[in-house]
Length: 141
Image (cartoon, rainbow, N blue to C red; front, side):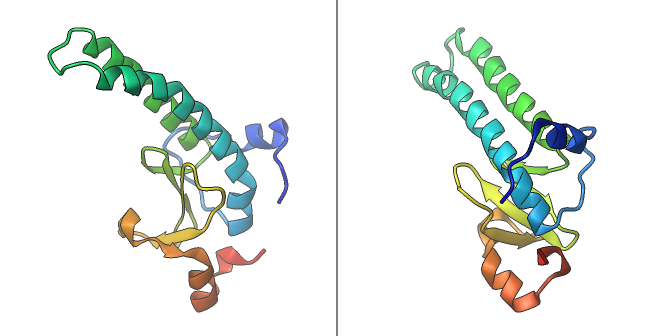
């Protein structure tokens, strides 16, 4: 697996909401960048979540923390989408293959799952099984 140079990553940046079609190798190449962005956002969000859990719902200090929470998440979503990747949930993404999504959730170490369009994240299948069964074009390295 290659590591991305900054120039390669910058070349991949697009407008938010413009997903692109990925091959398995392209997704694997971009995953370290996604992991780094997600780990950073998760670390930034942790103290905010901890403070929020310590407050009652009626506490006036909760509103600014909710705004901080939302800002961190929105920034992460925008960064991920600018890479052409689909955000499926908090710290969950999908690389569109044209036939479904290569799925990843933080803190997984590698791309190991696939789900078809319209399928829930709970229905993810092992990537190795999908490749063996269907031998899709996007999996050719």
